[in-house]
Length: 39
Image (cartoon, rainbow, N blue to C red; front, side):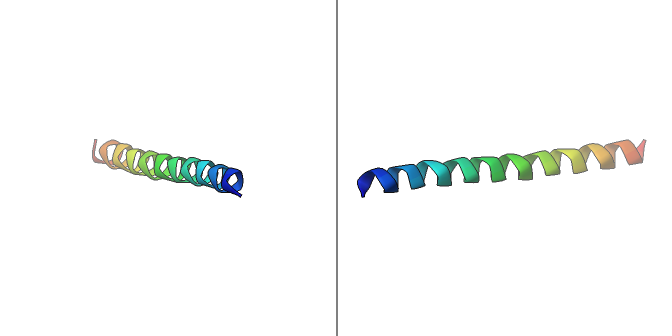
C-alpha cells in the first residue's frame, strides 16, 4: 500500500510540475505577444 501511495505522489508532483510549466510558458508567450504588438 505504501508503494502505491509513493507512486501516486510522484505522478501528482509530475502533473503539478507540467501544469506550472504550461502556465509559465503561457504567460511568457502572452508577454512576448504584447511586446510584439506594441512595437
